[in-house]
Image (tube, rainbow, N blue to C red; front, side, top):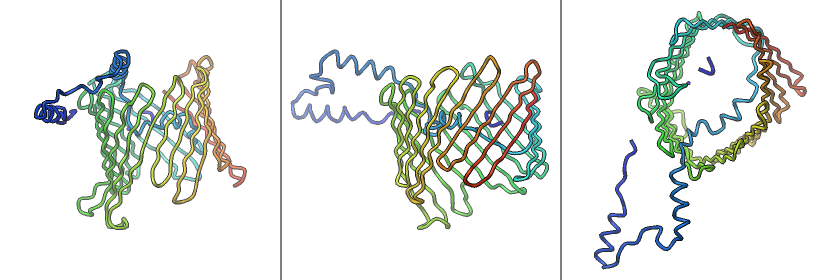
Length: 337
């Protein structure tokens, strides 16, 4: 279930410059006047080759995806496809550190397609016998506009809500997110993000987070951050820099079987910094995937996933340990379907 969450044309300022130039009797010159023709052609060619940079939320996703997502105890998951568009999931989790029990999940995928591997809308939900519910809806309204809605209920109460809209232009993306908007309580979080492709390799942008409410010092606070990504071949550098700290990640696809990621997160207010090294090994011939990670707090984690051919079973073994805290957690899971 984890894997399944118009351009407004501004006024042309050149018209105003043209009127002033005409009043002064001076002919208006283009911005590329005086440049060599080869340089002009190169700039125009570069501009036409720019592609959409994705969203700010996806900046560090490559590095995060190869990190080990561990679990504890025993887990059994049964996936059953009822049709080409509907699937249900039954999950039983048993461990000592978190509430154990049964969860039922369902996923619906619509028939509106914008690509060979994308269909909308996508509706996902998961509920337990106590009534705790998590729901997600993703819909592509147009070829460029996508909306996402997520909510969480606990003890028959709505505890979290998030609505996100992404507009993907030819070479830029604008995103707006509203979290826990409370009309009666006068509180909430609004996050605006913008990412622009500068060259084929470089993308720069910004993020503005605004929080308001009676529990916020001064009743409101805003934080402005700068973001960027530089990609060369199979290497990707990503950075988020703000007044509270910075987040830097590096991803490298070393080969068809090996991927490596390094991530550093620093909180200046708390004066804390954490560095993480992660890797993923894919062995398609053996139907095996292994993810491992090590951070500066001496947490060592690893997850092994093995497809048990020809049976429709997958075995997952998870381990996490810390020598300094003398702790060790082991998990074993079986996925059917």
